[in-house]
Image (cartoon, rainbow, N blue to C red; front, side, top):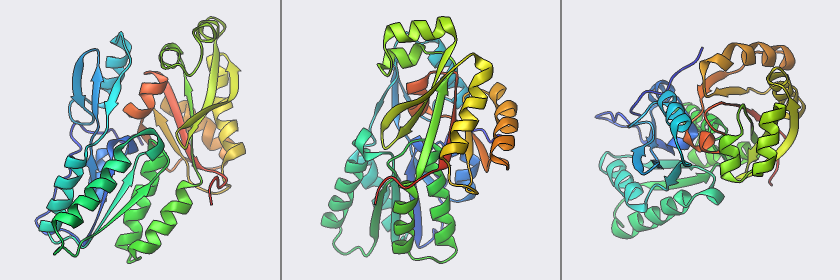
Amino acid sequence: MLIDAAQNSAFERKKKMSKFVVLTDSTCDLPDELAKQHDIDILCFKIALDGEGYTERVDFTPEQFCQMLRNATGLPTTAQITQFEFMERFEEYDRQGVEQALYISINAGGSGTNAAAHAAAAQFHEEHPESRMEIFIVDSHAYSMAEGAGVIEAKRRLDDGETMEAVVEYLNDKYARMEILLTAYTLKVIRKSGRISAAAAIAGDLLGIHPIFTLNDGVSHIVKKVRGEKAVVSGMAATMAERMAQGTPYYIGISDRKYEDEYVEVCTKKVGYAPAGIFRLGCAVLSNTGAEAVGLVFEGEKRRA
């Protein structure tokens, strides 16, 4: 059921492109196979770890990044996607006859990437006044598949003939409801990131206490603490069931295959139906949780108008 992200998520462009294109960034955690299936273009973040520079989804697989985190002495940092990179993409789309380009971004409050896209769009129209290509930019306010689920649905709706304006309206509503629930099985990285104090992390590891927290709109909030690894999966499933809109799809994100079967079984039993998909957590999440983590992505109550 798990679809692994391949080493290179560079967009495989077709000789004849559609009249519209959907672009996103690598924080969406979409598996490469799924992105290619739906012709999703992905721009990748640059990652620095222990003095070395990498490009996400190009220089390592999710499994390799987990091992890098386990061996690291410091915390990873990311560099935003630049205005120049967006400009290159927009100009390429225009050359290929694209009429409408939709970029769905990482949470704008936590990265300058969204602002870089807006600046590139303005630059493109200034430098290419003859172009009729429209550029639409949507802030997902999210990370991981809380961002990625909307990307896939946007492409499906466009393929089915919906207007770009209708899809943008749909996305703004959907992203006001998307949530990601996270837990970490070791608190080392969470302590280094400052999300919990060093004393709390040490006590948590000694006592086997695991936080369950949300990461919505760029803000993390601990919603529950459970004691013992066996209690984590049931606590995660119960918390999701309490918060999610009944009957809506949900996704399970894992850092390691060892978590897959148990989470699928417990979540299916608690929610009443199986997950819509299972994916590998990427750098944006694992940089906050560490290499031993699970995330649940679902649709909850609307948080914004």
